[in-house]
Length: 481
Ligand code: NAD
Image (cartoon, rainbow, N blue to C red; front, side, top):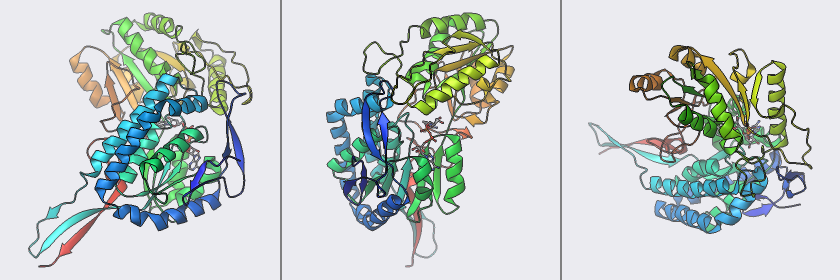
């Protein structure tokens, strides 16, 4: 069995010997790897090693931690081609998107290396001696991530965790084990001590509870679905710090003054880029006024040129859906939409039933027009290249519809009217508000996070004031004269 776990300084398999196969979603005959199916015994072993090892990492001078993170960024750039190939093989996204994502990871590590030298405390007024605060790392931090951004998301969690002197227990998605392994390898090669990081591969169902309830784990930073985020919230208990970034049902509103072609390009990019598998992807287009049919036609025209295929093929614009489970979810959503009698403006309602061994989970851009607000397509996260168009009569109606979901991750509006833009930024229930650009695609230098069921809203991640706060605690010290 392949040794894809990293526990107590050694690459190893799961303690119980269990494993699973990960196959290329574009070509099922390509076996990506036999991956350990870890369980509670592996969590125990990893946590014990990290707990023993992290004080030394915490005591490592910050200049050295900065050096190591910058070195890891350099090594990523040197190895980007090989790492991007592994990512495309196991997740399906185009090779260009995989290269970009690894480069974002390198940039993230440099950002957090820089933040490490800015960690500081404060002094407070005192009538008697000195009162000041110091920052301290938390200890072992669990990092649990999804498959859709399998390196940019781990890097924006593991980077700040290590920069501030914590130890990391990393559980990547079961769909992207090679990228998880490559990231840990590059960190070790750059000089992260072997007892400051552990990697556990396997399914969340088998590992999740043991990780989030392990006594050594002081904080959990998670990105994934609402259902799993809610389970972690329930299991973790009150004494553990949690950062939960979850799903979305993102809307793009088009006002009557918008240019039809520009609006269509924004919608098509937001909905179908990365096969619609971005948490910030546009899944609803809400057209105010009379341009619904014209915009549907233009988006369909753009989307019909987006070739779905193997991410290694230079002609491919959108790769396969990443897993069989996800493919089945998309198929089911399309079948339900057809059963509801919805109007299919582009795409196919007869996707073949495929096994893991067959692979080829290709879904071409799928568009439903004139979708009523009662449809499941207007509420549920599908996470694939499926877009619902709604027609509304007014801005107020459009915003009410955009907000009529349990999620609140990203939203956008296309208009040139300043007063509407300013109003929208206040009215919309979303953590990320885009004006005249797609809901997807965010800056690496700005805070990221949703509201409502898209986030537990404790700490924003990625960048911005306070982004490092999740990874440290403060101690207030009273020093008598
Ligand atoms: P998922 O929730 O199924 O899995 C995410 C991770 O949690 C995986 O590593 C999985 O193994 C693990 N997990 C599963 N059950 C667990 C449990 N009981 N305890 C602990 N861990 C467990 O999500 P996914 O299918 O990998 O990714 C798609 C989802 O991620 C979508 O809902 C998408 O919106 C969301 N997402 C959100 C953001 C964001 O920043 N808000 C970014 C990317 C993806």
